[in-house]
Length: 143
Image 1 (cartoon, rainbow, N blue to C red):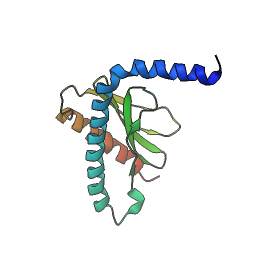
Image 2: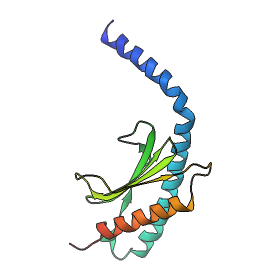
Image 3: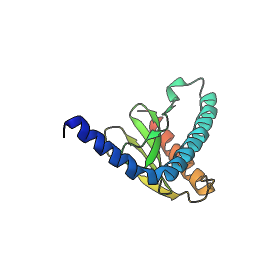
Image 4: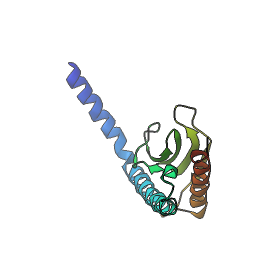
């Protein structure tokens, strides 16, 4: 079997295997997009308040497949080397990572189950608020 045929066959087998994960992946993607929207709206309010101090500006990355977990989506908030990541896993949990410096070990991590259909519990929103508070403390500290 030539390389092209071999990889085509591998792709077919893997795609067939992944079919059973489609509903959970769709649910995780939807929740990641909802959380991204909420964080983006909160950062818009933050940016209005710091308009006179643009050096305090932070960015939010797009929702994308997670870099580490096959069945998860992530987005990050970053400023310079400072980073925090929200990972939504198809198995029903959100992992809040950081804050940390790019190129250094990631962490700390906090895991929160999202379980219900709506997905956004008070506990999850409080966890994200705490993550962003810690991130802003780190990312905007004068050096």
